[in-house]
Length: 304
Ligand code: PBG
Image (cartoon, rainbow, N blue to C red; front, top):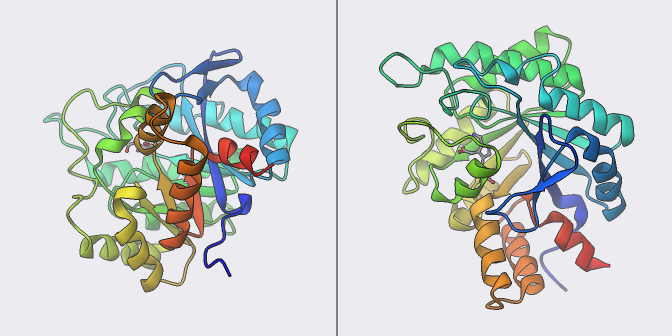
């Protein structure tokens, strides 16, 4: 009789891979989450697969950064190496490659920056396209642009098609809001902007109709799946997107949502297991086909 089903098959687990790290290093603001060295990936892939989690979303911490973010599309870039390791260990684990420059730029913005400090949308598009092709070439099954530059889905689609990756789908971060809840991620990925903020390219939290326009635009540019991010403060947007489009809809239960719950649970103020189950169920109930969540392993382990 239950109306809403939540299964491991709905869940994607984000992984932070750090160049030069051996083993795992805990992320302070995300209790229970670690950055992984390349040597830790094979064992992680095996354990995720044994929990029934079908997919991971990869973020990289490169050995060096520059003003164009060239580590994002380097042949031996950190994520490129990580995909190969995962696929060597567990070829059936689906790997989603996040496309963005903020982890790779010295200034921490998601695109290239002009002399006056503003982000140059159009000059960023070829770099994102090159990153997408590089990630697909390394073995990513799905390309997920999170940069929020206008026109990037079309640029990435045509670059993938022209490079022999016509079958590689795009999961676009279509309705991505300029949110305080990305705070812990920026610590985890060392990607906080050195100046300014992301409000010129991420969405105003007050805008619901605009979110639908962004989703429709991304689908018309070739997105095969769309995402709403963050999840909990935007469940209304998620429901509207689910009602409006036919493609699969993903929701990203982001780092700050995770940190908030884990901090309360760590203090004994919330029952961790019940709270996680309720959060993930609410995101499904609001219409998500896919939930990207740092709670993936805790939730799957609790199903026993
Ligand atoms: C990169 C990116 C961010 C997140 C995913 N991809 C950070 C940002 O936009 O600042 C956030 C994910 C999270 O908070 O868990 N642009």
